[in-house]
Amino acid sequence: MTRACLVIRRQLSLCTTTKVVREVRRTTSTSLPPFSDEATLYVHWPYCLKRCTYCNFNKYIPRSVDHSVMTECLQREAETLVRLSQVSRITSVFFGGGTPSLAQPSTIAAVLQTISRHAHLSGDAEVTLEVNPTPVGLAKLKDFVIAGVNRFSIGVQTLNDDDLKVLGRDHNSQHALRTLSEAKRLCPGRVSVDVMFGRPSQSVESWERELEKLLSVCDDHVSLYQLTLERGTHLFKQVHRDELSMPGDDVTAAMYSTARRMLEKEGFVQYEVSNFARHGAVSGHNLGYWKAQQYIGIGPGAHGRFIPIAAGGVQREARTQTLEPDVWIREVQQRGHGTRRCIKLNHVDLLEEVLVMGLRLTEGITHEHWKLFSPNADLHRILGVSAEVQKLQQTGTLILDERGLQCSWGGLALLDSILPTLLVELDAYFHSQRLQEGRQSVLPQHRDGQMER
Image (cartoon, rainbow, N blue to C red; front, side, top):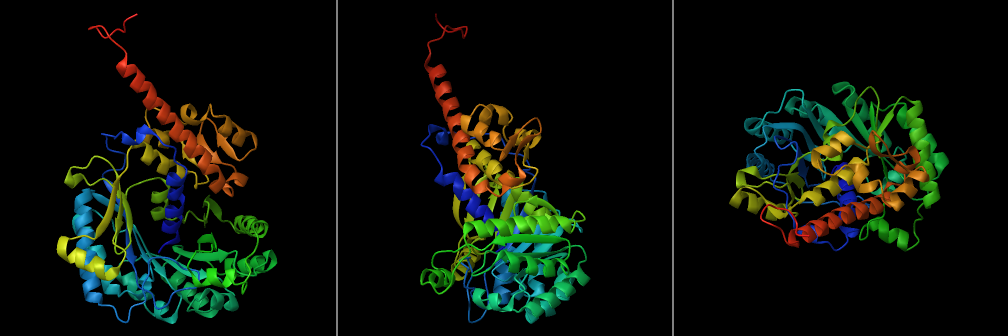
């Protein structure tokens, strides 16, 4: 799975874990959110050759894969959901996993052709494929480009071979460097590398040396992710048995700060908490997530956010596809899609996502962007009078001004601790608005609409 999608799930979990009990949840929005005529599209390939020690993604290690059946089902679900959304344009496509570089290039081509038959997918639309930098992945890069891929995201993770073994990766540093070199040749300026910090026994000094080497060979986009211990993974068990030790919070904070400084020195501009680009090579697909645009998710376990207009929908829905590939295949064959869960998002739900996603961007949320989703209540009205928000401003972690709402350079590293306060304030504002509307609705009135005195 694309790590951006994983980050989205973790960030959006804050929208539920910090809720207050509020009647406003019973209200619904009757107007279409913006961007209802276009969407991005995410394709999940669930299969891997092995499971990494830190991974709890939706992935499966099958004895064999029926590529023909998977291709047909991905095509059919893409057709069904694009039609359901009635979007006229798909602005980008991202193939994530799992290990989508294990898919056949013909599968990638077939899915892209199906999308193009049912919505406009321009010839220069960003089409990204995640690649596991093994000899198998390297050998297929050219065929993936022929199939329609024009951007690669390489899961390098680390250039330290010992750490790659600890992480359970099935490539080594030389495999990664060769794959990166070929990807840059095929898609110059459109290759991203994923690199992970906060690994077992890692020091700031070793991280700095490793990053220096990576920056000497990488292309124009870097995604930094801190390794997190996920319950149930092999790495989690190793750490809790004291077989491995993880760096402390102060060390990982120093690693993040060091990386930001080194990337900036090499001409990279940080545009999101984890993402850096130079020469304008930002990920258009991921920007769609951060700006709360619609996205359609196909494949086992994929997530989506769009309005099912063809079914008479007027609200954006949070949709999750069936996790298990075999069950998902049966459902797609029977009814055209494998949507397992569908939750309507009301106005406040949507604003929470705009807030959580938008503050990950270094530019934050402009007043103009917020107004697209909240035309009647601006950021100053909702957050400006809050004592807690004012305290965040006074400490220099949050900025609310005439341009909009954003984290400071230091505040961006503390985003997870800032968001709960903002979500509570957002909820409290709309809860008070609903109570006020309720009181006004029960006041006796004259026929001319004036209240009795």
